[in-house]
Amino acid sequence: MSLKDSINKDLLPSHIAIIMDGNGRWAKEKGEDRLFGHFHGVESVRANVEGCAELGVQYLTLYAFSTENWDRPEYEVKGLMELLVDTIRKEVPTLNKNNIKLHVIGDISMLPGNAQNELAEAINETSANTGLNLIMALSYSSKWEIQQALKQIVTEAADGRLTPGDVTQETFKNYLATKNFPDPELMIRTSGEHRISNFLLYQLAYAELYFTDVRWPDFRKENLYEAIIDFQNRERRFGKTSDQVQAQ
Ligand code: IPE
Ligand code: IPE
Ligand code: MG
Image (cartoon, rainbow, N blue to C red; front, top):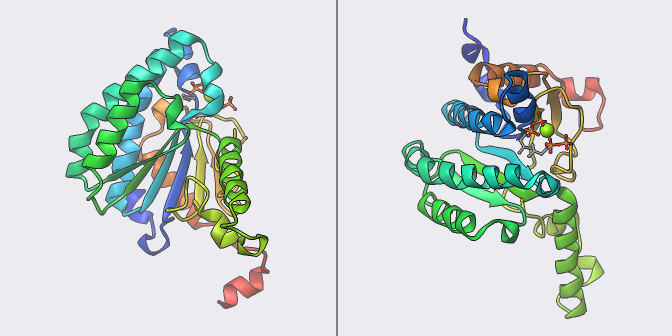
């Protein structure tokens, strides 16, 4: 039986989040420039998006560029932004063909104007699609997200539109960039780093974490299937005992 066939369709994570890490090291190991790694990383994005869409995963969030990544060398940031604009432009027909709806979370105002325009167009052109929701985290960090949520809450409170009693876990969620999406059930990080790097800190509260040494440009469909199968073999207890969970 192939890996894909051994996935239990009834136990699919509805939301997978991925920290796509290791492009730079992958390139360096080949004696190439870091941008060569980012370029090949796009192939893995394609493969994983297609893999999730084929399986019927509902939400896929990809961490593509963090707030902290703005501090990288100028040529790398510039190269990544050009790759982003170019990729979005080229991928829209494929997204539409596969019924994929594009979303973006992050401080988009930091992106160059042409990237903002391409993104807005792609979001608009895929907005009627009803299959996989592909969420790109761009210029994103959790600390930025929580800060802007608090700013909105304080503003509304100062205007008298919000009282302390209005703030519940349900209403708080509405101030986050992820307000329209369920929390990820599975978080994958490639390339051997065992950290979260300012990614969805609040939303990953109960996610299953999966770490692999495979570098992002090498992480393809079979690797995704392995991660999902690993997820399916875990017992998610949400604070309860194993006996309680099994009795359910
Ligand atoms: C991930 O790969 C892509 C981005 C952060 C944009 P890296 O560029 O972080 O690759 P490494 O970690 O240096 O190998
Ligand atoms: C996290 O990777 C951000 C993205 C994958 C976009 P980094 O490579 O920037 O993370 P650190 O700096 O090693 O924690
Ligand atoms: Mg990295």
